[in-house]
Amino acid sequence: MTRAPENLLALRRLLLDHLDNAPGPDDLDPAEVGIVGDPAHRGGYHCGSDRVVTNDYSVVESPRDRAGLTLDAAAIDVGEFDVRSGGGRHTLASFSVWCVAQCAANAADTRDIREIIYSPDGTTVKRWDRLGKRTSGDSSHRWHTHFSFFRDAIKAGRDQRPLFRRYLSSIGLLEDVDMTPEEHNWLATVHKNLTVLDGRNPIGQIYTRMAEGRDETGIPVTGNWNLQSMTKQLTDLQNTLNALAGKDFTDEAAIVAGVLAGLTPEKIAAAIPPTIAKQVADELARRLVA
Image 1 (cartoon, one colour):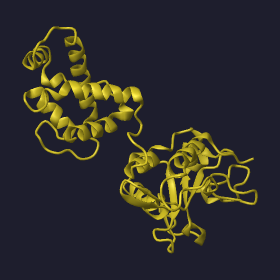
Image 2: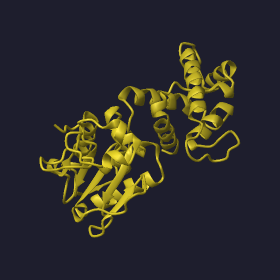
Image 3: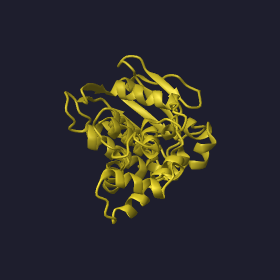
Image 4: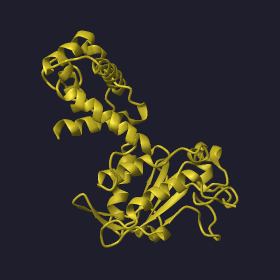
């Protein structure tokens, strides 16, 4: 029988962990977040292989769906909420519009989403369809938003939470997404060690550019800036600082001189896992202006 896959159950838990009992007039109730259709439901992404119908659009329109068909459902519905966080009001409609905008921009963490059926105003029903085949849905989507995922992504067990973590972070209900306590402690150490260098010598100037998202020419960089370069630079610098920690430096000038003696600006780097590189860059930028 059709089953709820673990990656969508994890997504459901994430949403309920932060939107159920959230401050505001209407939180998100568990009964409002569903994955598997009721027993009478036939056809579509809420159904697994035992419930699809002939020429089911959730199977035949994409090779990703044909290759990924299993007993797993491949959709989640999110019901109405109206919460207050980060000084703003956040509703099902604003959440849906935000998610659609991310999909339309082809953000990396949206590429497993086939479609979103939603209402931007509680009246008009719209559909964003990655395959461009449909533009609307039935009236029930005025009070719930439907997310379909390509079946191959569900079959592969791929984590579908990153987009929704970004949303929760953007409205102030989730802090420091995708970083473990150990990673935060490491970042805090790097920042503390670099503070004395900030802006007063080549190493500090490179650190400043990295935190502000500028390249070596000082020009702002858009998109996925050269994170590998940043990673390598911060790693070597942290290693050098660790090596200097056991030496008896009595003043700031000596510390700076020691760092510069053993490290050129081109070699500054950090062992930041690629999966958190962007979050680290954002955190460095936040700390720089704090």
